[in-house]
Length: 544
Image (cartoon, rainbow, N blue to C red):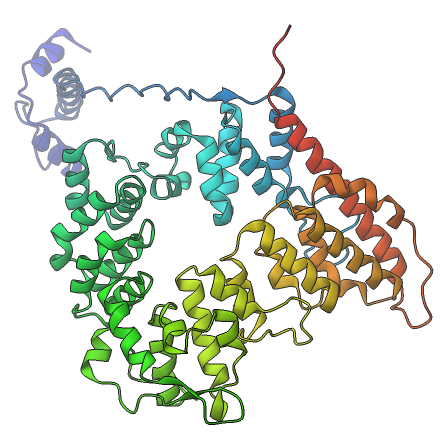
């Protein structure tokens, strides 16, 4: 390049848009700014563009540097013992087989043991190893049932990671205080700011977390914005009051009975009916008691029922749904709602001072027994009344598996959940001894883990009887799966005698013996593995 050209180019002004136009149209049609027409114009254009490019780049202001990533918070909990950390890695690495159906073989299903391992680790207060957090979050992402225990075990570092990876954002919604702007629950201003400005999921999480710590503060927060919330949001927020529900919530819930949303009104009425001393419960008691009485003129005292003839406005305001579902009579529908919302303490006084057992044993005239007993079952579950639950459950050895009051085994399972774990296990054990395992699957699901010894023995004995009888083995696969997760690991040694392939009766299902042997081997192996898991999580003895 000549000195003249360079000097001339250097003196050209930085008209970038005009230079671009000359380049697009051609220098013969548009002479570059500051250059003379002719054969030298293309070179002058390139020189000017080069100089302008340097000036433009040199004139750029440096961008504001990104904020340096803050280190992950410390987890003050005790580290996992090395053997337990190794076990966790194996549990997280296991994946369900792709084949789906078919025989499972004798190998334990590690994915079904992970929830139990997490529960045990959380009970002992251990911190998750940092290197296990990605796999733990991936597992919780794929299984919603794992999330509460997994996030509790993962601790604050999981939330730190979740803010960096969109795939793990569920942790910010699921963990109390996990939102990116979630305040300390001891910071009233931060709580109010998030409540007023946060996303719906963040507000639900905040309200739930605050309710578990300070029920009154959570209710007061909800009252501040209640009138301006959408109906579907009011329903979700109202549902959070179930935790820590108490008499102090009654005033707010009574106001919610006048809500413009039918679903909100129904939920408020349900919550109030779970407070036996509430005004709504008293109103329901008066209505229900007017429908039920004892007729002493018959050969034996009998409950007689006169169901409501109408559903008036006051009943609707108190949560009674006027329109019956398809296939249900209106009067029986209204009666059931009144009886389930009335305090169970209403009935001994109304029915001549009888105990719950005596009331349930009374005959009910005109075919009303099923409706009335079903309503009492729902009331016992809602009010967590163990005495009524026992009466409605009846004796586990009763000939009828449906019980005196429960209309289904599912109803019985809900009644059992109101009893303490020991009584629950003893009742289900007695039920299995009388009725076998085919009716007991739902009942086993509500028993505490590990199963108490009487229940564990009843299950194993029933499985052994089914095996010896040549029963169709696959029909017991669900109970076997429960036993693997719920039997006490100490039962493993008692099962060794069941590992051999039994002689098959002539009418047995083909291959049943080998299936039973395989299933019992898997059960024993799983129980011993669970025992090893618990031993690995035991705190190490300090060196002497």
